[in-house]
View 1 (cartoon, protein in one colour):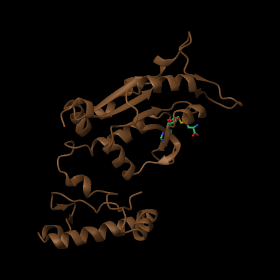
View 2 (cartoon, rainbow, N blue to C red; view 1 turned 135 degrees about the horizontal axis):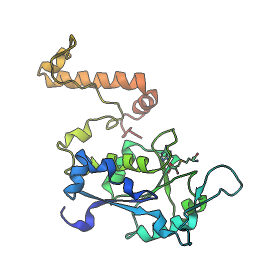
View 3 (cartoon, helix red, strand yellow; view 1 turned 90 degrees about the vertical axis):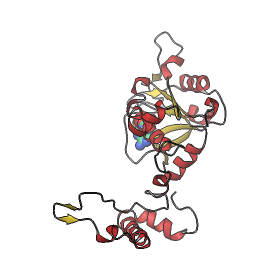
View 4 (tube, rainbow, N blue to C red; view 1 turned 180 degrees about the horizontal axis):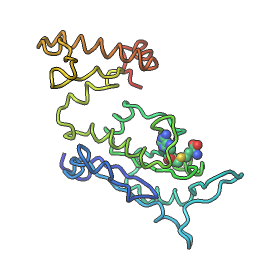
Length: 242
Ligand code: SAH
């Protein structure tokens, strides 16, 4: 696991490379980055601009507000960045398939993605098709750029890489790992503003604790995420965290 050639690497194409590593440079992800457990390459899309003004965007064909990232500039940036083929090519986009923990797990198991961050009104459709970009959304809301979305995706992947999280279990038991939201957590003090820790958690009876946690996770998922609950009930034999 020391060979640099096989290290998990995120290649980010952005108009604002100075935003990286940003929050990925601290805590769990930042320590792992410093230890060389993963690598980050933030590349400036503008470096692939060819005209005198280094322009990367232009007005939308057909009219309308804002600017659109040019297909030729973006394609050149992608082609210049991609050392090895076979790397997933993602475009952060509110039109994309919503990111799930199972897709995160797949991405973490691979060589690491190339991620295009949009800005303005988005990117020219032709480059999405020509470079077969997989559009990925982090939720049904609109950000001003793809960078924060890319950071969210990278953070979710990095914490699953070997050696990044302290305990192997902490990845296996959390929300979505079995298609359910996580059970509630407690720690000291034993009484907080008069509210005690649920007695069963202090009983030392591991089977009872596991059963209690499962019941809590199920009740929480049913109440908050009927969509996840329905999937977990339908396919309790399969992985159900899609
Ligand atoms: N006009 C576009 C939105 C552009 S927002 C539309 O209506 O679909 C500018 C950029 O921010 C996008 O190109 C994308 O890269 C990023 N972005 C915005 N919301 C996002 C989301 N929910 N998930 C992932 N990326 C998003």
